[in-house]
Length: 119
Image (cartoon, rainbow, N blue to C red):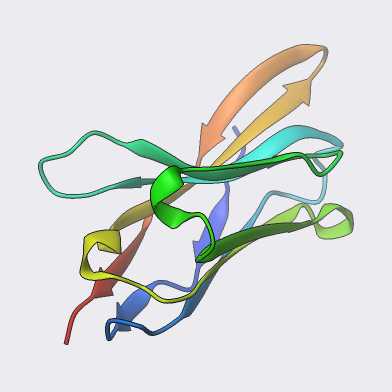
């Protein structure tokens, strides 16, 4: 079992910023991709952004230009910088990692961190 440890959620006013982080255990050697999903009440979980080990990124249209993903491969950590937050960004944000163990690809999820954008 691989535990992804998330931090950084909270309450912020519209237009504000938050930074999320997610760390995989140091013993994990091969992580193909790390990213963030979110799930708002009554909605399906959706991809926010992801980044491969080589640095290729993908963003949901709704967050382009406002959110930035970054990775520190030496620390097995991915970050999500969220700027110009909107009330519709309110959701539980989940870290996601695609990890290779013994030549098999596994997908792991963090426990989720609440982001609330409200005045």
